[in-house]
Every structure is written in C-alpha cells, then in structure tokens.
Image 1 (tube, rainbow, N blue to C red):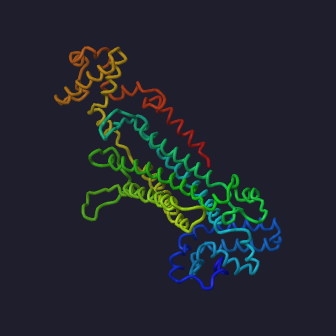
Image 2: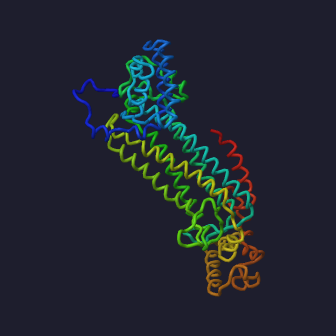
Image 3: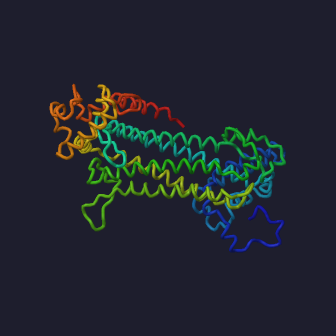
Length: 460
C-alpha cells in the first residue's frame, strides 16, 4: 500500500519501486515506529479524531503487530515501500477502516524523525554501557599490575618511564570522554518532533508536551521546518561513534605492537587470536586488527551522511532516506568492537619484566636527571645539554644507565651531585611526578581508586 497516490494517474515504475524502497534496512525501526504510533493514537483521541474504543482497537492491534514482528516470517513477501507503510498495512489488516485515521495530522517526515530519535536513544544507552564495561576491564587490568613499569613513547621512541596503570588510565580517560559524548548525543536526540507535520506544523491542536512525556522525551522541538530537514542528531551519534572507534583503533595498534615478538610485553588470549593456514608458529592479533579496520568503516559512515546533508535545501529531501544505512552500520560496528576489545583486555596477560627491562636499558631517565640538575640550581638549558652529552657518551661506549656509578657520574660532570645516581633507576624518577595527573606511584594509585568510583557513578 501507499500513503499517497490521489494526485497520480499511474503508479511508480518497477525500477523506481526497487530503487527507492527502504524496507530491507529501515525495518529495524519497527518497534520505535509502533511505540510512536501508539502514542500518536492516544493524541488523536485527545483531539477527538479517535474514540476511546477506536484508540483501544488501534493500540491493541499495534501490540499484536509488535509480537508478530519478532518472527522473521513477518517480513516474508513484503513489498511495502518502507517500514512505516508495512506497519500501516498490517494495522489495516487487523483493525480495518479505522486504521485510515492513524495518519491524521501526521507526516512521514516527523514520523521518521521520531522513530530515529527513539532508536538512537537506545543505541546511545547501549554504547555507554559497553564503554563502561570496557573501562572497567581497563581498570581491572591496571589493578592487576600496580607496580609494573613501562616505557612511555613519543614518535615511537622511548621517552620516559610510566606505570602500566598510568598508561591504561590514559585510555580510560579517552573512553570516559566518549561516554560523555554519547550522553550529549542522546540529549540532543531526546526532543519530540511529533506535531511538526511535513514542515509547517500540524493543523490539529495536539498536546505535544503530553506526547513527549509519554515517550520519555525531555522536551519538544522548537521549529517544524528544522525538524523536517534535521539530521544533526544522527551526525552527533556518528561523530561520537567515530571518535570512540579512533580511540579503540589506537589501543588496538598499541597492543598489536606490544604483543609482537619485537616488544613481547603482552600475551593475548587464545580466544581473541588466530593462526596461519601456512605458518604453524603464528598467533595473530586478528581481533585487534579487525577493530582497527572497522574504525575506517564507522568514520566512513560519518563522512557519508555529512556529504549527503551538506547541500540539501530546506526542508525534507528524499536524500535523507540515506541516513539509515550509515547509522545502523556504525552502531553495529561500534557495539561489536567495544565488546571485542573488552574481551581482549580481560584475557590479555602482561609480562612485566619485558617492559621493565626495556625501560631500564634505555635512557628514559634522561629527563629525570636534567630536572634534578635544575632543582639543584643548574639552569635547565645547561642541564639539558649536560645530560644530552652524558647520554651520547653512554651510547658511544655501549653503557646502560645501570652501568654508571655516582663517582663516574661526578667525573663526567661535577654537577651530578648528591643522590642523583639513584635516578638511573626509572622507578626512582617517577617519584618526582606526584602532581595530579602524573605517573607518580601515589598519584596513580589515587587515580585508579578514583576511576573505580567514577565507574560506579556512571549509571545510565
């Protein structure tokens, strides 16, 4: 069936029907469409379009349709234009002529906006729950190795020593911002569009606030033309999903490297790795590589909808039908990637002696020495030069930090006084970094405890 047609002498061509149909993908909105239509039926009763008996008949029919829709056979043979016409056809089969009243004062433009907003609210909630689970896994992994020391990197070169927990909490902060972003996206989607009509507002005196309250919206939209042409809320979701995937991809890249033979820091669980069809020795980090690869798909979804929207005139244009596939795709890939990463983190095993050895044999202590000289009165630029020469001499002579004694250091540069030789141990230098946000052991322990408290407060 069509929700239009009186203006036309003939129907759409078969090619156009195939080209313009969206049921194969927008059927995912069926539950939201039914909930919205039930609320609209009640609104129609309040303005006298439906009697109480008619409203009850329609609402009951929608309940039955929802139950039927749980079976894949519900869609067999359906040739409807989209999910909305499918639902109306099913309604007419069950409720009869009264079904023709359900679209009184309502446009598909506002109906699509409503359905999408209802669906996105739940997707944002799911994304936040999955992010919280992953953040919890990171905190648990950090707590399992509270004293583990690893080199921190800039430019993929060993830079300064940090605690493993400090490193993991950096990703905790990234995902915490993602959690907040999905909350923001949910709030912007959580305004009720019904009553906007096609673009000029409805000609019936609907109580929009009552409909909003029934459907759990925080308020109503302010401009009917904006509603008809708006997909900002979808883009907000796609941006939040894209940035979360960026963070997942960065963590995946790190752990692909750290679990390689060249690093040897991590042992990934058998359940998240795979072997080679040719090389028996291989244990490949396929789960992480897939996360890294899927990030590109999600970012493509954001770009796709942005490009679709960028040149559209006010208000609704059929181009906007193309918002659904990238939205669904991004939601699916994000959810799968978050669940996968949580399992990777939960089953990974750190081999603490490997990163500790990497820190001890390199010159990640150089900044600690320069800062110690500065605290003792040497101007920092001069201190920087002294330590740089000290490192150069060591590299030329094949000496590691542990190969130096306090006496040898003083001979090299008399500015190396007191207990500065102790800073050749990476753990000692970290003790000077106890300011908030630093990698000092006391600070990191407090940050880890605070992270656990923040997780407890992240109730949806």
